[in-house]
Image 1: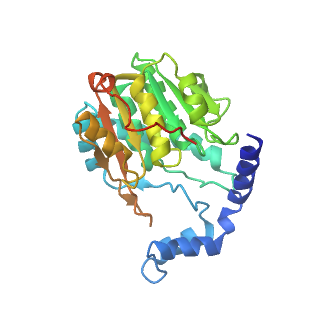
Image 2: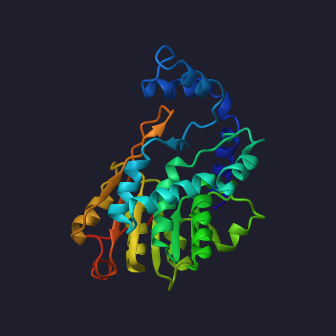
Length: 299
């Protein structure tokens, strides 16, 4: 753990200077085919001042597609899903207070859009799970969005909790320590392979957001824990964009359909890979016999 902490501190030190990593950002723009001639405003805005060189944040331009996806998968109408989107975009905790949190940070955007986490918010508001598990926290944008959804669910009479796990002891700074939101949050520092079964023991999981490195090893272990403790249903979401085949393989085993939602970033160069979604009814989860071969533990 000491070695992990040292690596985390080194990453944080590098991240603090990301606004000044012009050569790195120029390489990123080149990688995604963005030229100064074709998109000068976007090019210069990112190159000169944007702090993000990974885990990009952006708003999305395809609300209608997200609402239709929610209607098909999360048991709400498209209109209800649109209400949830509006609710998130108007929420002070996810807008003005979030901006106050990042205003004087050199390593974060002054205005941090939550578009690439809106799918999580809508799923949480639609299904109202009693327990959400998030593997991988990073800066805590996803955690903040999920906690606010849980608080809204509580206002509707349904209590829920979020368990988030990450190896980085400095993760999650976007969730204010003094915020009332933390009353519903269990933040665990360590490896999911060591800690996940313990921290969710005896509690049915309604959603799992797999955001540790998207490897087959990690996903098999984390999805396996969720299926063994599935609520009815359990929603599994991963963001590899289909690079990792685990969720599709699991869908085939269970006789279900893996769905895929691709958000379309607004005014951003990043071609979002999208998120895989599998909704598993409890009877399917209870009949799951595990992965073929030895199950490997997550890192």
